[in-house]
Length: 446
Image 1: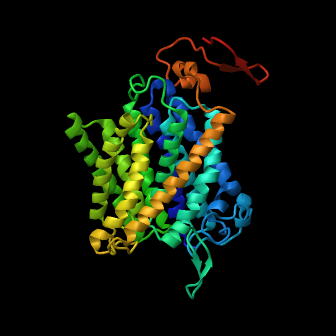
Image 2: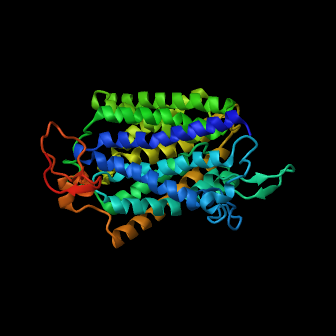
Image 3: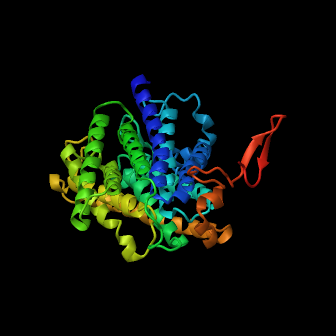
């Protein structure tokens, strides 16, 4: 064991965990004030549901022994409850298995939380939690196995344990989750949008972001955590992590500039929301490519993704699908762009050691990237449509029109995010009795 590598991975796991509350603030500021708490709760709910499932069978399904040698799914029972991992020395020569498991748990949680932004203001909270658990089990855990589980080999180079088919048979490069996280979540977001339909009054009466400073704060936390997300995927505090760190920085920076330029050319002025959206688009796109490109290549990936995503978010009005917070336009499109651009901008001098089309590698890596990206998109879209339809048909998924018009915070959580100098509170309150018990108060509380 290497204490430096172990500390690096654990710190990066904590950084990735911080991304989920950061995402909650980012999404929460973009909705109307009467829906901010629900947006926060959807991300926090993902922490609860996926965190528990990861320990029970999620880690095993993603990184357990491959079932059938096809590279499709790890054995959910091999590390059931993770008890068998207690006492094991480590995943590799340098870090404990539990450090890796903790790091990957944060990826699973964040991926599910990303989906929620597409259905802001109109999904019931209980059915969302059910969808989150089913989707993590049936979609994320298998796809994580495809992308993140690598073959184990002996000293002679013989495969002793089969890993995921995308990582090993196709050999697509996805360093930190362009396919498993962003394309996967973006496809699920599109499926939910299609099943639930648009918000009441969309597109004319859905309002503007109620708190842009909150959006900027959330974006800053996401960018901060993303260094752990990408650089931590090196699993060692070395050269690869340092290169990935720099690529993550400049990819996001270039995308922000590109998005603002598109806004300036199309609408006359750059906006704060556009700037932070460009940052996220660049981070999404550089995620799969950060180990395969040079810093100049990272700038190119970021610039292309920023411009393309800025144009893509406007397609929802032409195609008539209500993606509330542009999860499809940023995460699905950004993930596709970043994954495919590996096939163009990859340099053999980067840690991945693969050359793309522009660096003399021909089309070989490009087709591998395309197969991996399209496979994850198709699988996630089809399964997500099925899961969403089942939830809708059994317990209902969407708010009633009356509840939606009244505000999702009050109807789903009996709370409101802001009290502007009010002297009355018409929500549920509580008080402690003389015996120390908590008694519910119904009605008005002064």
